Image (cartoon, rainbow, N blue to C red; front, side):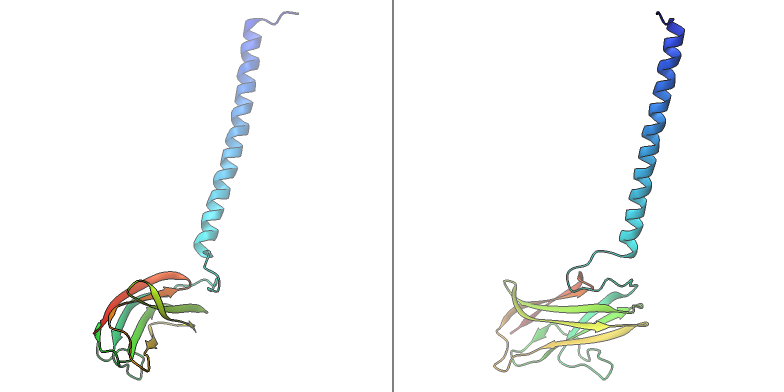
Length: 164
């Protein structure tokens, strides 16, 4: 049996069109899946172990260091230069709301040696200040230090300071 060329061409065109529809449908589904993944990531980001997964609109706006804090947990004397016997206070200022957020302060010495690490849970409903501090009975060694503040497991702010 012999198929004429016009019938064969029509059959090929129909087959090609059907194949294109199948591929287009598969690509459209993948794009929709990708958009769904993006939305899920945006509304419920992956966090580090021990960090909160609650939706949050809280952000760290500033970190201030000083030798004292007031009754509102705000640094009274903003400085980045300390004596070995000082207690070093950090006032971490946040803005926004969250039903449950983890604020973490990691204090390190010159080569990254951990001096102290503290986490505080908070549920802010606007502007807030959270206080962290370090000191050592015999005094902190002289040198350069760094405070790294993490919010829900993600680095939010850093502050360099020195003890001399």
